Image 1 (cartoon, one colour):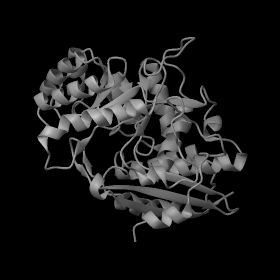
Image 2 (tube, rainbow, N blue to C red; image 1 turned 180 degrees about the vertical axis):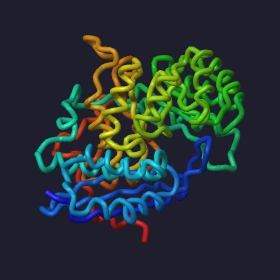
Image 3 (cartoon, helix red, strand yellow; image 1 turned 90 degrees about the vertical axis):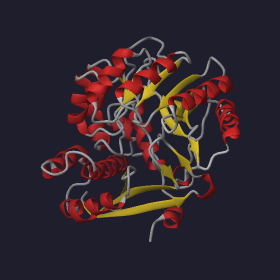
Image 4 (tube, rainbow, N blue to C red; image 1 turned 120 degrees about the vertical axis):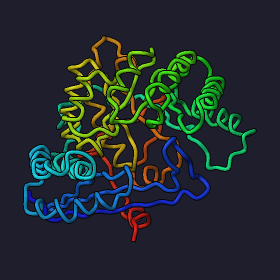
Length: 389
């Protein structure tokens, strides 16, 4: 079974009146980069990369650099292929665009391998510890400016309450765009809205230097926050160490880190309590296996970051099924020693419309797809609808 073709699809969906902000940027659209690999016997595998920044560079790397190396090669050897592509691009692509391109290709090849054998990806990765994964809602971003300051907190409380009503008992909100005082008022508003029993996470999107992150982390302790995500910029490992040493709130990070080599240093330097590799960014499912092994050796729980289309979510669920409790107990507890899955609640047609199957919350959990490969089917009509010309 050989690779016959490698195609890329840049997807864009304008959000119109549903635009939102993190601490770093405005999100006027949802975009991503999908790759479709087809074998000479007609099996199709789907992968995703290119969620961070413009997807065009990732598409160019796949189409112009990697595809000529792939066509005519075996289609069912994702680990071998990923290692060879990384070795080829190591001198100029240890992080960023080239690794995102490898991620998309790798996911697609796992999908092909599973389809060829009639097995879900998690079976090929060693087996599943669970058939569904406890989900947390990501929401409570910032609305598009100009803001009605009188409505910011009431609207935030109402939004947070809807997640609890939908069945979530873990909620992640955004901070970092406003002053520490204003954002602490937002955290207080969400805590009021959801009550004391909902586990609350905050995501800074690396908005702070270490001093400010420590200041805000100590304030977050008062609200029973269960993690502070990306408190400082990804390059500032000493800052991560300072924050982790100074506050009792667990520190999460790693979505902007790449490959096992980046995570080796991130973990060995004691930067985080929760590692967050993004499978569509860090090197794909093949590299995730190595990163997860490293994290477990350091006693760090792995909770993959998820962003993008339904392909990304399916890949994450396949990987999450394979993570053992960290550490093992007879009764694993979500977030304590049992991994959880990110389920972003902002408007995202690339996740909710692109697949024939849909992901829906059931008893606070998302089912792991059990079909061959990733266990999903891309709706070709929707793909054409959202594909950039």
